Length: 443
Image (tube, rainbow, N blue to C red):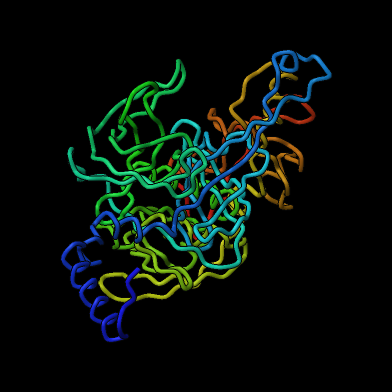
């Protein structure tokens, strides 16, 4: 072994080695490709989902005893859309899961509550239990996608958290049948590597913006996977959030997205006698913020209300004819003014029990939790505990359905409708006259 004669010799050798390295390896900035930057941009907004559900044996499913079923582990991925912890994933990821467990990007383990689901589109909205703000995913659009453009998928593939794969958009507008009762429509087909556990995770464009939600793969095929276009998914999530807000609040108005992304929401309808009408909110007003939250689109608007409570004062910043207007709006329980009841949707099991007792199929119903004295409902004998299953010939499985019926018949000469009620598993009906809004004369 030959020893180096001096420290000066060592420095000379190290300098020579550094010069060789500069020639042999690209500098770091050249290695930071658009793919690297895209993954880095959104990695913190992807969560990994784990859970267990009980799968019953065939014997137990037909009523036999002695078999409690077996526990099956599942996994999937979710996307943070709001810093408070609201997450989008696939419905099949959380279906029948006993407890939804979440691993955040920094490795923190926590749980999540299922806020709403849409079985047909296979989407679910979760609320992660967190005390610190979460990073939200940059949102792109699926309206201008091109076959051949590069895409990236991130997910909990086979339990390997935050696995990233790359591919291209192979095709657009694919309809993919799953079984005899379910079919996905208008999906993005991609060659990016999608595996079990990727479900619910993001499909990104080269800028690191979400353009789809990974949902399915073609069995026994290679590089054939599918994603729900993000524009379609956001529309469905908006409806889920809207239903949650309608079940708890009544602002007395309906909004639509602005003419361009980022231009807030526009008031499309104002209900006579509601809180919005009382504060002189008008059709055409553009809502730009609620409280401290800026409103760029319907998703922002829905999320700005999702944790507010009945009777809470909210400050709305509005733009009307190019001028700013500020309005304090206090929500009220839905149908409290028009009918005089507080309601909440019944559970699926309650629906099944009702149908088995009275041999009739209802899609759901609204459980009466309070009746206002002197109201139309009170005068017609509606009681706490009644289940409203129909009104004016239409089903009332949700508060949104009931609100639509009330608005429809309010535009007609007749303002009286027949309520179909289930009380103590007996079907009844009564006629209810809608209350007239103060200062408003019906035709």
